[in-house]
Image 1 (cartoon, chains in turn yellow, blue, cyan, red):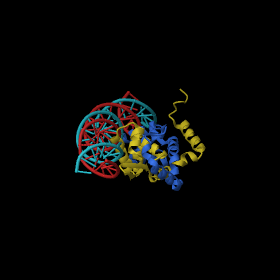
Image 2 (tube, rainbow over the protein chains, first blue to last red):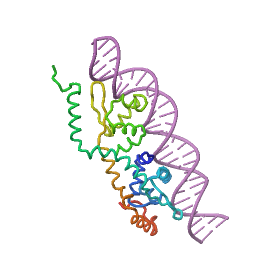
Image 3 (cartoon, each protein chain N blue to C red):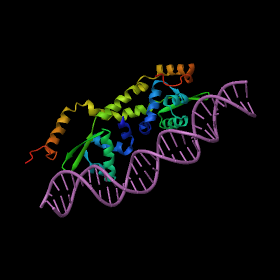
Amino acid sequence: MDAFVALAEPTRRRIVEVLRLRECTVSDLVAALAMSQPAVSKHLRVLREAGVVAVRTHAQQRIYRLDPAPFRELDAWLAPYRALWTHHLDALERHLDAHAATGVSGAAGPAG
Amino acid sequence: MDAFVALAEPTRRRIVEVLRLRECTVSDLVAALAMSQPAVSKHLRVLREAGVVAVRTHAQQRIYRLDPAPFRELDAWLAPYRALWTHHLDALERHLDAHAATGVSGAAGPAG
DNA sequence: CGCCAATATGCCTCAGCAGTTATATAACCG
DNA sequence: CGGTTATATAACTGCTGAGGCATATTGGCG
């Protein structure tokens, strides 16, 4: 799940969000991010090595686009957590509330 | 999307994976992770501030459990990227290829 | 071949974070 | 209260990573 780390970086997430709409050259991204070209290239390298983006060469330009694989992976990772909100939580919350009420150290109890 | 950063850290992802199965006290996690208690507490703080976990007090113990909210958020963030692999990409790729052929470099920045 | 355009890499600095040990806070027990 | 357990915070260290500038590299053109 290297992609997780790669995508955690805000600038890289911005890059990915741009690439979601259309593939871009490095210069496109530099313009879009208002950032030095080396910085962008370095982020792209990280994304590339994490498998988040793929490149193809067109003359001197490198055209970057998203690779679906890591997103799939992320989706798979997330899958079991979906139960957290698809299960209604009603019963669970009542259960936890009850626990809290009986065991929370009596802060709200009779002052004595 | 602070949760993204919080979850990028491998140790924190391990914590979250343990908490997915059952809620835990700090000591439980210390045992599960084979790591110093302060380190665990600090990770829990990060997760707490990112809204990933919630705490409940039971005597001296703090019982941590997952909060669904950030996972929902993550799911929402991921949603548009699902098109990357659910569409078999056939049409999409043709579309992108066409764009590339007509000149991607002409677009000097995000349309918006 | 020499020049230009597009991109990548090297080197540097700075900031932040993970982990450690020592210590403070909080809650229970007698 | 004093002692003990459970957790949080503080101070410190080591590492990594982001961003900047300068420069190497790669491809196209005359």
